[in-house]
Length: 461
Image (cartoon, rainbow, N blue to C red; front, top):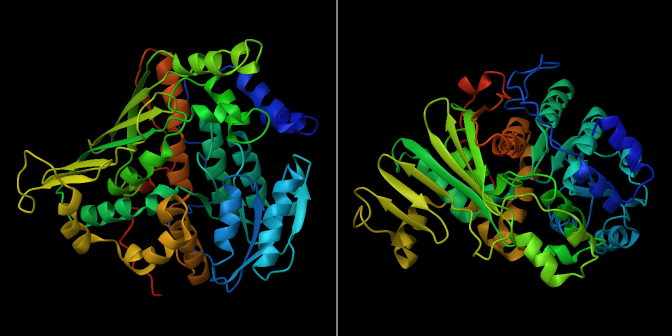
């Protein structure tokens, strides 16, 4: 569906019907080109902006995810919530109430109209926009915000197609605005500690990583008219590939310096048969229910294998329906050792007892004591207290605000957002073509060769 048709449709359709129509659109059969379009601005690698004494925020989408962002932003020094935009009045008013209870003036509400975000973006008293909406809205909202001078922080995945990924990159470069996908998992205690292990060379030269998002989300299908399941379920009827790659991939990509010294080169993807969502719909919903009238095409488990330009390999998996405990894998293998997550465990030559059995459980305390990330050492106690997936949500928002107020570059940029998100359309194409290998676009346009790896930041607090 072309962007102009999408925007025209949104003016008269409800959110759930929009999602239904989008899901009915077939995946393009033409092979996505790895060729980079002509740059329309200049690079935003390492982008910094003048320090902001006050960070004036507008929120789009304050449902299950966005409402949490509002509450946590309100406890951060220097943040002012100016506006809230949502399709549903009660959700918007609930978050506005939290703002007032925090001692701030009541924010302006933009409600009911799917395109109300455009009016919010027209304001000149908003510095950043936080987008927590259904996936198909991310790019239209982010692009409009950047073109109107706002920095953008959007939920995962950032984009759904290769063209959308380029649109985010091109717009960020043309406007010189931050466009960060809020990959919260990069701020988990384990992930930060493993990043420190990798940066200090404890695991040796990194050769292989394993990332996943395996999470049984079938219960979301009961959110029929409103909520995550009301729009996300349609995507399982449209796309057969890795629908949600970034939670597992983000941290592993940072360990392995993807886009900062190396980059993804090629990938190949395969999916199992699609079985469990149709079974669940048949068991839990009436025969004439819309979930039983549609056809689920997503394989129950997708496996994508990627190789970098410098010869590292990655396995990226996705499964949101099979009965299986949650895992992101979070595995990185080097020449001197390995770390694996869920549960956390390690083997390090010269440090752990054996290379043939895992060191795990209480025996990991010494590893954490030595290699806990400075960011977690300084803000971890507060982050855990504030909550949000064990504190990673709060730590992510704290770090965003810290960087903006101190004029420092963000830990993630638009090139990361595009690279981590593009796994979805590329995996879908590869699955549709019997696992055929496909090239991954270089969203940095060659700058990965000179971009510095993310360092172990030690904020001054």
